[in-house]
Length: 401
Image (cartoon, rainbow, N blue to C red):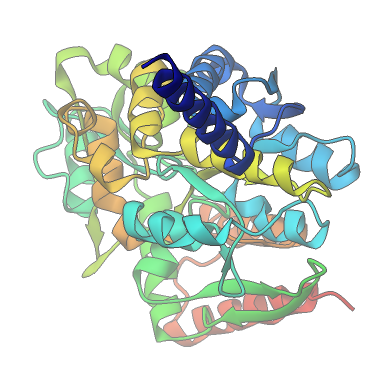
């Protein structure tokens, strides 16, 4: 009997050694950059990951507070000194790929990302048909907040403006901004995007603002910016006599404070027969290329964990970030969030903001500055088309030489 038990014990030890040999672990250090308000949350998730994956229990994960904008700039400046895993916004993807700061998503994770996240967030992490990052949020777009005691029909912009004027309230939107004014052009059916090569250079433009649809959009803008209820502003903290404002989830606390029991939100309204569109924004986690395959595998596994549906829902509970995961989006807590529900309704009418030359933003502002100044008042459609033809031609001159 003792001999049998000894044999069983030896066999068990042998099997455990085989298991350890087959487990691909990593015991080194990994550096993670996330937004400051998610540092403690991320640390908690890291410990949960290590508990669920014993093969990584011995590795050290240093979580540091570096926001999405700074993270992208730092990575582009010095990839080697940068984090192994870092958060960033979708408009930095091409620059990061060009800088060699992003590894392709691990092949075993690609299909799960496509199946489990909304289409906008998947498009936002895709470049040249390849996935370069793990979707984390779908919450950086804009929609309509409104005072429901003032606005009777949030689906119609003309009625929103009329209701605000009748109540002595203001309608706020930063129509000057090249991020907000595409809501008219894209909604009317226009396109304005730039193509970049693998070096991040602007090599092509897709723009049809100089068209009948573009004229329709510009006429809508002229009507809005000359309306007595209109104020060019997108910051709720600076809003007074607030009737309605085009804004994002980042301002939901301030809007709710100002509107109290009359707080409400909806997707952007219709205007002149079309649904307003615009840009959608997304946050994601990227993994830096590694020379150590075991470390790369650990980074991919951790990034997948931190962007899983469970982690996204927990992140919403912790800091209010809206999930890109389809199941998490359907949770009662997320659906009960007035702002996120409005954004979810708006996102199908948006495109993910890609790369735009710095000059584009100034050009887009100038276009609407002239509308606010009244320079387009009384112009014929043909004259407005000339304005947009000049705009489109100028936008095409920003391609890399």
